[in-house]
Length: 143
Image 1 (cartoon, rainbow, N blue to C red):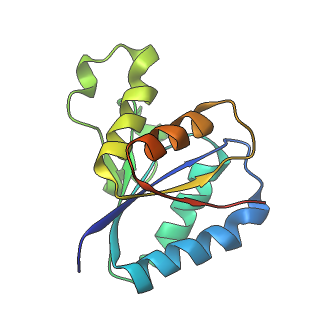
Image 2: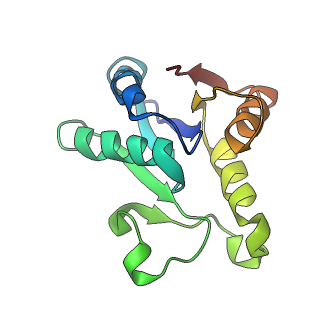
């Protein structure tokens, strides 16, 4: 495998109706584009959908996925603790900048960015633009 890395940015209120499209994109990346590392955040519906799809597909496909945390989790808040990571250096970042730091880490790590962006404001739109500026391949999912 060529070790292609993928990260995700989408609105926290993303509708669950996009999950089949999201699953199709992730399957294509694994089966046809040799993606084998995935990085997902922990905020909102889009991240929950990504994590659900990755968890399901990990039972039948060979790849690694990481839940990239912005904060040290409380014990009961740790989603998929067996896959959770913290970006290096995040312990030195003030909490109000931690999500930005985490998101920049995922863009720097990834070759491909999968997005669900329906409006031009908010974090998902901001990081989609940053990914484009950094010449990452951006795959857009729409409702």
